[in-house]
Length: 252
Image (tube, rainbow, N blue to C red; front, side, top):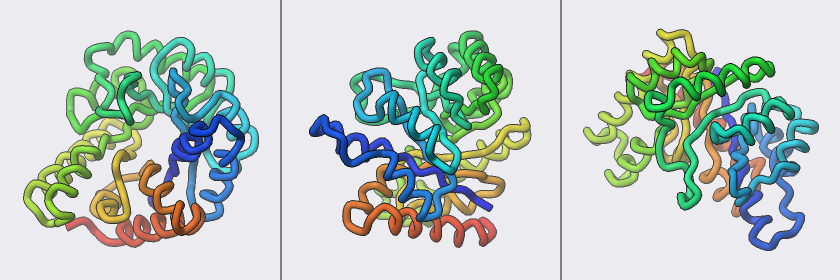
């Protein structure tokens, strides 16, 4: 059964716009759970632009579904993760000037350091994940450093899908989808879990959800955007229904 991890960062973005106490990301986690989410994702950025340290602590103590902590591979973040012990820690690249994560983590260029980070997290009993592009060298490096999960970056696919007028059968879209499929096969062959995410929405999610062996999708902005109009519980329910329906059909 395919799972949905809901990223609630942008609930905190709205709160931080006024530096007040609402909307509370914890309530967002509850609503997402009621809508059928299997997990909650938050990115504790070094500049604390949205999610704050106390949000992560309260989510870990209170949420009744698994918590995925996206984080840069810094000593500060590793220390926080080892102390709070999220169910999953996902290493992502991070730039102060980016609006959102712009690409996958380059494991190949920093393999030794990331291996040490993964070992520290695993030693604290935390399942470790890496957010990477659909490239075989990065997947092989992820296996070498001991990652348990690879989340394949779906941003290139999503952007082509949009540029091609949401035509799921456009050759350019099918080419990007094939890259994700091949990457997922390599991830699984190397004994890791195949997850995916980034820029997925209600229009482009089903071809990805239909890929063989995919375990979990992490989706945030599209769900929080729809929640402005429908409420978070309903927005999550609609996304989970699309994913589940697609996962029940074989890929073409």
